[in-house]
Length: 129
Image 1 (cartoon, rainbow, N blue to C red):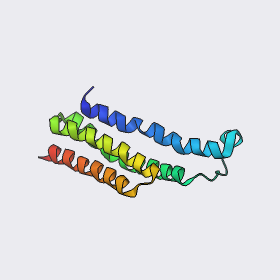
Image 2: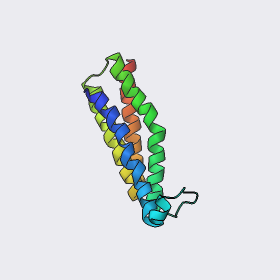
Image 3: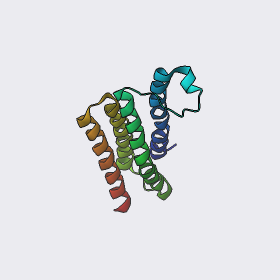
């Protein structure tokens, strides 16, 4: 598996923990009765879990453009050492962004987001030049 495909897969698989963090927080608050119900009402969750939900939404908002870009690199055969390194940095920034979001450090969250977007632009620049 190429580095670029591994990074695309890593971004997709990062969805798993981001899916379950808020759910586990709701389970802790609502218990088994809530977990096995139709979930017509949602138990209140602590601020960190609310941030985890927002981190999850942010991940899903950014996932398509990041993964599609990596797939275009793979399909076009334009991967090079800079793209490979930048793809790894992009994945690391997305994971860092989510952790910073959940623990509630806005400056670090923003750095993770900006790092992932800058990485995306570097990859796009390499694709188009």
